[in-house]
Every structure is written in C-alpha cells, then in structure tokens.
Image (cartoon, rainbow, N blue to C red; front, top):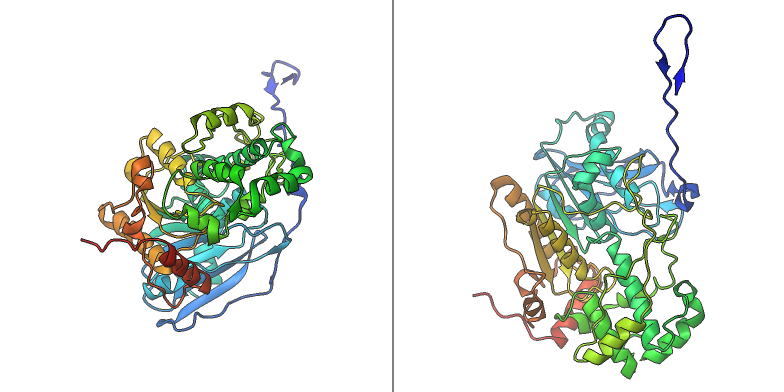
Length: 466
C-alpha cells in the first residue's frame, strides 16, 4: 500500500510484513543434549594415530569432531546418524568407518541434530551448520586449521535421507545453512523421501484388504490389528496363512520385487516388524507435517502368479490421497520433509541391503528413476549388498563404497555398480554378490556376524570372482 508523506514528495511504498509460516506439533517439542557439558570423547581403541577430539553444543545440537593430531589430509567427512526415536535426549553417533577415516588422515564431524523424531530438515541444517563451524571449533580448542579442501557426507537410514537431501539443488536454494559437498555415500537411505511412507501405507491397505477389512479407516489400525495379523499369520511374520502368503508376495513387490534375501529378511532379518509398526499413521509423520502426506494412488499391488487375485486386490484396497500442500516448499528454509529430486552433480555411491524391509531396496529404485529423469544418472553408482536386515553392512563394504566415491571424485574414474531397475537382473540368485564382503572386522558387531552366518546357511554361496 502507499503512505502519503505530504507536500510534493513521492509516495513511499510500505511493504507489509511477511506472513509467518505455520507451526506444527514438532515446533512445540523440547529436546536437549544428553551430555551438554561434554568437551571431548573417548579415543577409539587400537587406532594407530593420535587425534584431537572435541565435543560441544552448537545451536542446541550436540556434536563431535575428530581430527588427526598430525597428517590431516585436508578433507572433512560429515556423518549423519539415523532415526533416534521420539525421546527428548539428543545423542551423537560416531561414523561406522571411524577407524578407517582417522587412520587415512580424514577429519570427521557428527551432529546429534537439535531435535528427534523424523526431522530430516533439522538433520540437514544442523549437519551443515557443524560443517560450516569446523574451523571455528578447532580454533576455540587451540588448533588453527586451513579450511577443508573437500567436504564429503555420508549417513545411515534417516541419515541417508539427510545425505541425499543435503546435496540437492533444492537444499542449496532453500537451506539456511548451505554447504557445497564434493561427494556423498548414503547407506540404507530413505532415498525416496516421503515415498517410503506411501509404501508403508500400501503395506497396510493391502493387509486390510487380504484380511477382509478393506474399508476400515486406516488411522484406526489399532482396532483391527489383531484381527488382520491373525488372519495373515499363524506366527508373525514367519508363519503366514494362505492369505498371508499372498500378502508377503505383495510386500516383496512393494519393496523391490523378486530378489535374493527377501525370504531371509522375513525369516530372521527382523526389519519387517518395524515397517508393520508404522501402520495406522495419520499421514503427518508424527507431527513433522500438519496434513496428510500419504498417497497410494500410484502403487500397483502384485500377487506373484495370480493375475485375477492381483486385479481384485487393486480394486478393493483403499486409495489414500495426500493433501496437495502437505509437504510444500516453505519460505523459512527447507521443506519439512526435504526432497530428493535427483538434482545434483557430484559423485554419489549409494549402498543398500537386499533383505531390508524397513527402508526397503525399492528406495534405490525410486532414487535411480528420479536421478535418471533429471539426466544425472552419470553421477550415481548404486550397489546391492546381500544383507538380511536394515543397514546390516560389514564395515568393509562401507569403507569400499567411501573409498570408491573419493577416488571417483579425485580422479574422475567412475566405479562399478549394480543395475537396480531391471527385474530379471535383480531376481538373479547371485544378485548383490559383486559388492558383498562378508569379511568380519574388529568394528563389526555381533548382529552383523550372526546375520551373515544365517545367510550363509540358507543361500548358495556367491560365485568366485573371475
């Protein structure tokens, strides 16, 4: 509007104040670092080099930074941890490849993020803010360092989503804290962003339909969970009924199609109950959004070998439709669930276990399709790992992915990967053998060792390399 100033002066344009962004449940929750007084953390047992280790709090998020005491190679690796639940305490995780990083001359840093819940927006912003504060943190602790000449990012699960989102053009355009990363290694990541929640919803509506309650309101799942589960399973999830066999076929196709390790994922991987535990969502991702983001309209359900049954299921299963603006762009920074659009131009090596049913292998297929649609698939290498659960990589597999990404970034030599799209390729009994490394190292947990043993006992051995 115009405000008159009197006399012959030109009118002054009065700009109205910006409309504030809406608030959501997540904005009213409070979190605090579990150990806000920490200034350092323990050295890693058996590491062959000395390091400087600094801990603290930055913008409400706890952090850890580790730099070789001598021989730093000038490169910084940011690590993004996975989902921490919904409690108030904020905690930091060391990268799984910590030993390799510090013995190879890298510095690394990791944030707790300033919130818990599935808050990828906070994860990107707080990880970026820590990367930008790296030199100031070092100086405050008495060490003057040159600015890193390379900054890489890696993360697991939700941290894979953070990794994928942080390198996107949209993040560079809209994030409050902007970092130009030079390479990325997302691991077992939610590389389809909100599409993961659509797959969970698809699992629920098909379970209801095959159990005979297709139209029951999906947000009232708790009222029918017992009925549905007992209809589909004699013992959940390893002893399906006849209807349950059909259901697991649908789940297989929703999570990546016919492939090795799906059966092991159900039998002993243990990740499917986590997906099943998401049923009943109101679509706000527990208050990260204000409106429903779930949309199953693009999903097609397949019961292998049963064309008529598949057609009937697709007709009977409820269709959920997202609110159009549930996860829109915002005026105050990143989307509430940051997008992975496939718009990046740095080397990315992404790895995923085949038996993962919580963040399933289909996330890699969605990622590849989005990246290819933007014409950027020359920057993406994907690898299938013959693990039976969620993120159950060996450290050797993770180190190899990171090494290959760095070599690619430094030399331009693109490493090998797997075709994650062609159904016949993915269904091959030997799929995933190329980049699976079952050598158990000192930093591999007992769980990974046990799972790999279970796989060895239930699947044919991979053919020897030629």
